Length: 283
Image (cartoon, rainbow, N blue to C red; front, side, top):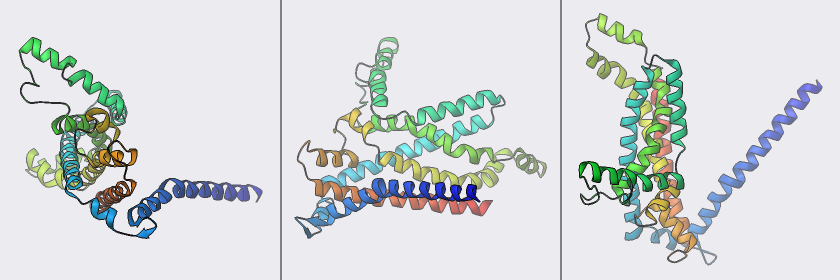
């Protein structure tokens, strides 16, 4: 009886701590963003919200959306291919090593990732100089720049691909070899199996992963700021400028941009939840 009472007390304490954590670090910041968006000098106003829809900030949303869509698509395609390769690896030790490597590189972002790419593919980077000296290829003379949208997509793909591997691998491992054998027994070809059987099964989780990759890229701040230092017009960078006062401090518009960004994230979240429901229908 005493043991049961202590267990309930510990469970209640854990719940209280979790609720306090959610209130302080999730709910309270959102309430602060809401008040900063719709309150101007103590009175209700939509001035900050309308300012967040000006041409400059609309451009930042378009750029962020473009970068997020392209990097998510590249990450999804290459990540699925890598997950399929891992699932076919007969050496289980090697498969676990590859999974661990994916988990490590999926969290390799921010300043270290930006610095690594500057050293590798910067104007005087190691690989840039190797290509120029060994093969006579000057990628910067050809128009490439790491401090561009193309360069940012390449950098983002570095953590999008391994993240895709971690998220899609369980679905890939769910494809049973018996299904392919049964399909071939009935006279079907391997390409037809992938089109008629494997693709419909992998499509829902793949769409969910795409939504998460989009949100992951859309909200990235440190990597983009450390790499491009504000030369690329992205929403998180604009919010940082408005709050930190790099150009002109305007916390109200920064809150409004954050609110717009939350709406985009919620859309991605709902897309992910919808994909989960679709996936459940196949089980």
